[in-house]
Length: 292
Image (cartoon, rainbow, N blue to C red; front, side):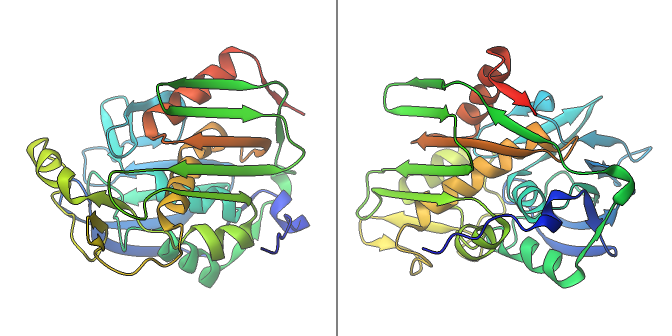
């Protein structure tokens, strides 16, 4: 695997060159939602619920996470937005540090279950640097941070780059997978963004009973059972790569306010959105994450 480091351009605060929209169904709500990405002239990622009175804004920030069951939900002053992780991962890693995401519904569209469509529109419209905002700050993990229980864990250790390792294992064949990448825009676009969300066939009814996956289909998720996945894997380790995508989308909430870059090695084993948030809280409470 060829590793491509951050080019100098991605060290600058940047926004999109123009307004761009994508429409799709919400994985859990089942509602069709239009997401419009709008340039901003100062750092920060904001969601705007355009369908609600007053068009309330919801800052992308780990402190506003209120629900982590099969997606990350943010809430601020009574307004909420769910399934934020794929879009936030794409914006953070692809270098968009200033953006308002306007939604006419409660959930970011799931699209094909991956972050690839978001990467494609970011690449199509291009980025405009914000010279007045200066360079993106760099954060370094200075000491090990671990959270976990039983077979689930998230472990962060100091590292001179941003490295991400994810391991998964489920009760179906070919689901014991691991991936390991040094994260950069090119690696993300080519190797991580296309990895699709997935579920086990045995999980479907319990999830529906909870009022979830009302918009789920074979068009936007892989379904795994004893016979294999519902569609061929895009990568032999696609399940692990999608978990890496989710880690990135949740970690982005630490840095969405100031566009920060990260130096650390994050190792997630059988983790999920709740453990990701718990790790972020632990890293901050330990004082292990330092802005250089």
